[in-house]
Image (cartoon, rainbow, N blue to C red; front, side, top):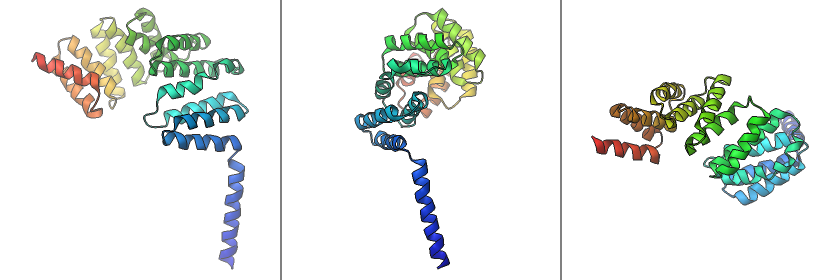
Length: 251
């Protein structure tokens, strides 16, 4: 009998816990996460929209939407961007500048990953203007400009500022090095990219950037070593494979 009473108490407590912790909007969010895992992005976005619309505060709600996507393996950035940008008209509700800047940084990054660089440029500008200390926005904006090969002096200043604000981030040193690479300043790029790889050695893209710089400096063997490491980390990484074949063809 004592065991039976204990079991009943546990069941009642479990029921109470569920009632207390799962609000209607959180239930919608949990359903959306499951749909994301299943690859049903239309239904996930429908549920996430309901979740945001029913949430009392748009800032944590949109943060949760973003996290739901980025925690989903191989998520499509265009679908994440689709729902996040839909709330841009409500950005004025984000009364704290840091929150508003973070939101626009997310829009910029997702737009860039979706191939919408013109839109990304707009959102990054707003993010940096709203909070000049937003090191993520500074870094991501600088990297996009480096990839496009434009406004490199401005990109350099932003990358340097990101490193100054938040040192210890391998990706920030990588951005700084990649901007310098695009400017043809290979020795300076090498210094920054070495730091990047030392800080984040398991990132294929960073090793590829280091290899590309070695190649420009005529250090083919060093480049091939880094490319081999990059392809071990990410076997189907096309830029690394292409450069590897190019360098091997010259030997």
